[in-house]
Length: 109
Image (cartoon, rainbow, N blue to C red; front, side):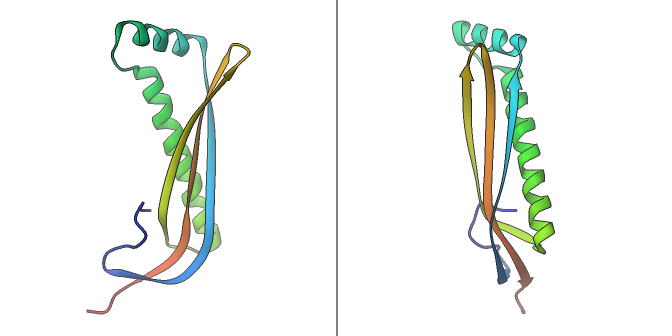
């Protein structure tokens, strides 16, 4: 998987289309509390960073699975989008990942 439109040393031999994966993680009251403290005193929120990392990893894993199911051996043009939804006392972190599933082969030297 790569964010670039091509892979050095390889060529795309088949484009299998756009694929995507999404992941939503709930933020519990303790993570919300710790992030509020970080907002007040400054610094990074380890709890939120960990949740974002978990959501990104889960989304990329799902994207790989979808590519494999389509017969791809690579995903190019990968894009990640992060959002936060909140309301009614609840917060959710949302990660959406898209890319193009392709079959690539090494260039002849």
